Image (tube, rainbow, N blue to C red; front, top):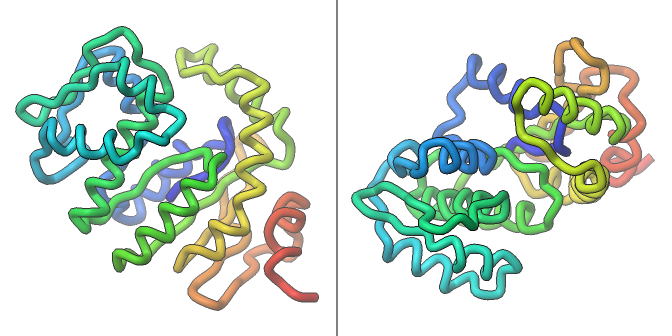
Amino acid sequence: MFAGPNGSGKSTFIKAIQQECSIGFYINADDIEYLLKTKGNLCCSSFIPEEISQVNWDTFITANKGDMRYEYIKSAKVTIKNNILYVLSTELNSYVAAFIAEFFRYQLLNLEKSFSFETVMSHSSKVNFLHEAKEKGFKTYLYFICTSDPEINKSRVKLRVSKGGHDVAEDKIEKRYYASLDLLKDAFLAVDRAYICDSSIEGEEQSILFEKNGEEVKFHKEIVPQWILDYLINHIIKI
């Protein structure tokens, strides 16, 4: 799982990791939303190695009737034919894309295929998913990247928009920033391996500052940013 607040540089970091190792099938809700808006459909084989059908989708949404996004999903009229996914209504938004991404993740989980996904990790369901993956026998990894101040994230999202990228409201950026950090400890403890990075300084290489391998933890720098101390290290290391 590649996690961190909006504007932290997850996509850039993922590209660097992909050059070093395989990350399996890759699921990103932003990519899903972009493809559906520009092409009008998704080829499911780009996300899942086996053919899926309308039955798979209907079963999944029925099992998630309690999800706050359920009404958005129903009104979106998602249809799967010949392994191609369509959104038949105009109700396509980030909620629908996130739900489709979750659908793909659970299909891959059930198929026991290696995969990775990107998330702001602002909801505890992402940590719960890590636990489910471990119960299925997956080896789980967390790559968490963040900045020292949500104002940095807001500025970077503005820059991204100026270059044609997707926007996120400033109040959502700040809310998700702190929600993501609040879940960092739980996510860190849930996985087999974890890597923590800081991207506060623009243009500086996003190097790993702190990592976990099983029960062992390791510092890669003598001094780490305050957010890593406040939201992670001070909670897991007894001084």
